[in-house]
Length: 291
Image (cartoon, rainbow, N blue to C red):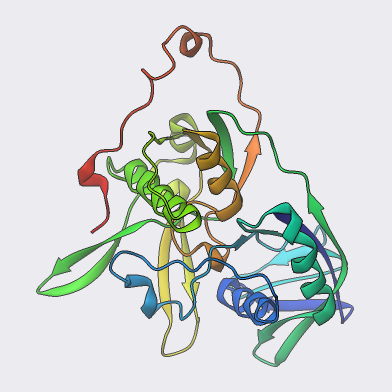
């Protein structure tokens, strides 16, 4: 299920903190608390995300999209209607209940230093889902975060994968497997191949060119920084895995509005068509699995 919200700011102009991911998550989560639809919870293998999120749900959202906006080092401001996409692994027949929940709350509030910026739900509509086969190219609507626990001087730390690391694609594939297991309560026995657009990464300047730093709970004692990346990605697997990537997002902390994907039409690759169906699918290496 994917929804499109058109939000109308209460004031003529709005201004919210530039690092609004956690603030927007809090507002959305407070509305969904009243929903009769229960969203799947995500708990990582070692519960490493518990320090960052008290309630990690399998949904994701896009950045706020406003044509009349301005970005500064500390704020995101603008005027006029704002678009927000929301996505979750919810069946279509339950979508009206989720829509009704948002409509019943009427207002989405984002905390600021001076109180709240309020946005009214001007319209809410469900978007048609793309048709998934065994391969699809996506663009990232928000940074993708993927990490593993490491030890430094006897202390646990999170290592955030960079896009060029050999383990990154496998870690994302494993993350998709875990999401499948949570949603379907069954083991996924197929192959998942994740491939980043290397040409895009090179044009952007490599690792640093596509890296994005996201600050959570900025300015508080619980401030936390997540490092991710943005680049086109192609996923090859069974259609349900591609659907999960589209509905849930890829990587970690999706309910913070991270790892959200949008489909794009990939150009035909004649050389690929000559290869047997399974020969180009790399099996993710076991050493890529986050501990």
